[in-house]
Image (tube, rainbow, N blue to C red; front, side, top):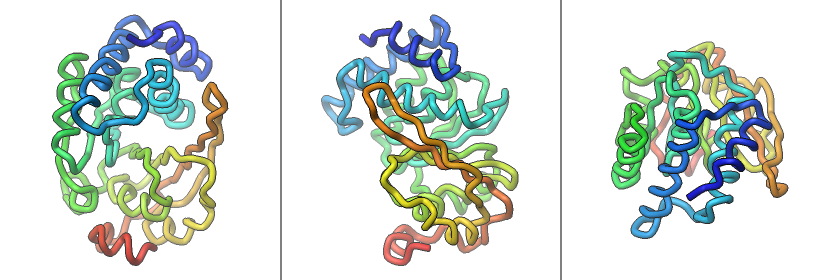
Length: 234
């Protein structure tokens, strides 16, 4: 379905080498994404080259800025259709990936993707604010990531509780938000912006990755319930 040469070449430009097995898995992923999207809302992007660029390459850009060492514990919060977590796993199948989402149908889709691609990941059906208070998950991950439209201060309250001290939270976002307005909220949650990486996808799509270092434990009252987060953001 997808143009594997396009994917391989664009990945190589950002320092990600994809072998034939990985390319085949991305192709399976794209086929399932388009197929399942006909019966459930997974993505507004269904044209093959756009899937390659706007979903796969955009997800893999994270590898330029995060050290995905063998055995690294990585959590994708509010994973949706699996971005960026599943592409990271396809390119690095020795990481320990956890996918968290509140909608069972999306997780059923991801189980099928993982099965068809012969990959393993832990799948957790939960709202992020509930999972973030789970002692088994709280402050246990080396890297936590999310690709969402929520403001950074809101996203950080959902995600930073999962990050262990010394670990990192990487938020994949558009470029219009004033990230610096979130610094006080990040400090309360135990995080600090270490860097903001700007990049441009083929076609001129401008994106950023906000790299937040976890420097201290998140106070136990966070994350709060979603209504409180929405009505009284940090």
